[in-house]
Length: 334
Image 1 (tube, rainbow, N blue to C red):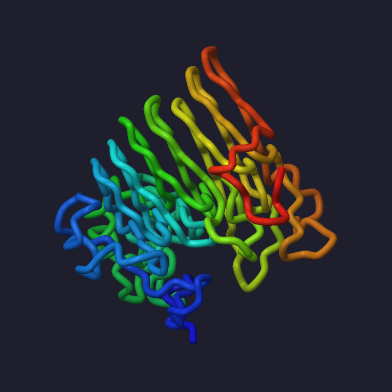
Image 2: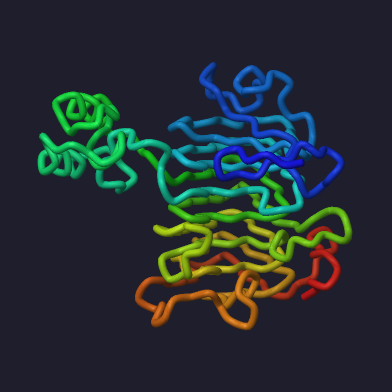
């Protein structure tokens, strides 16, 4: 039996390895990732069935040690940031276990009246144009305090939140940090950023158990559901923008830059290294949800893009080098 937590799927049937047991949110005690008291369940990190969320404008620091989780979403419906300065973080779930920038709309207005992702001067202009108007539903437009009218209270609401980031997420790997995950989605429906520092490592290694039915679980995806994708399930407004910058080491099965009509940008910087078991796909036609067709709108090119850049010297980009430690599931061998 399953229950919906927001737009995430959580399963109560703990016997299924394809389900999450519970959603665990980062709290406000401190910025320490490894302190269980910072999470909504004190007994944090119990196993691979749980998924952890960093959002609500929190910046979370992982500075050392070794921690194993099920899945991790950095920015589900509001901005979040994970900074790893050392240690090892391992994600075991058999779906896209690291997601950065999952949802396209922030939770509540938070003063971001123009939905730009930042509370700034543009929102004041929206408030100014709508001042004195009654809104159709509480919270519409510049009705930040949800009074039903755009008034002075909404100006105060905006002013108190100037500088706030409202959507998108980022993961910064610095020092000798190592993040290992069965799959990674950077910029799933909105903005996502991943930086792999000079001494850091990202491993996207695929499911560790045989028989997984998740077809993309072992890949690194950058920029996924974008405006060129056909909106399904009442999900308009897709605006995926993914950026990955690599100065350290990335090991993965395949690299997908723009999988479903989004904008993807993968940058290999001087001294960085990328080793792929599989291949590189730019603007991939993915037929997972639309048999025999890509699921894109007519003339999608102006609304999507993919870029792979290699700059400087001293680095490497290797495709098709089989590593048994990064083996994809059966049927997905390079």
